[in-house]
Length: 152
Image 1: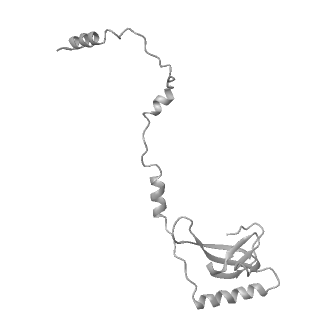
Image 2: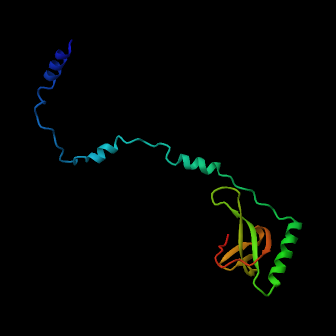
């Protein structure tokens, strides 16, 4: 059958409805063009997969366990800091546990020693920084910080 024959066949097949108006549903409102287009939008089956992979690749460090020698060194420096009358500025390196996975990272903070919170076993610096003593791996006195320096 040729193309003209096929067109005539199709026209004959639908001749009873070809000139009728398009039906309009009373139950379902007409879909907007935006809603119709959204049906054909690409489907992202792996939404969040890239973020999960990035999180999995992110490295954490193991916490260094304080041995007796390290504990004595830290105690000696802290005793020296706590007995001084004038303001003492310290640099403290301590472990911060990761919130999402096992391990964590080491953070260095510079600040002015305020007090030792014996009840909670915390080293408190001015500015509200509280450092768990059991997580400290290094502490040393530093020169006075300038007014514009930040706690880091």
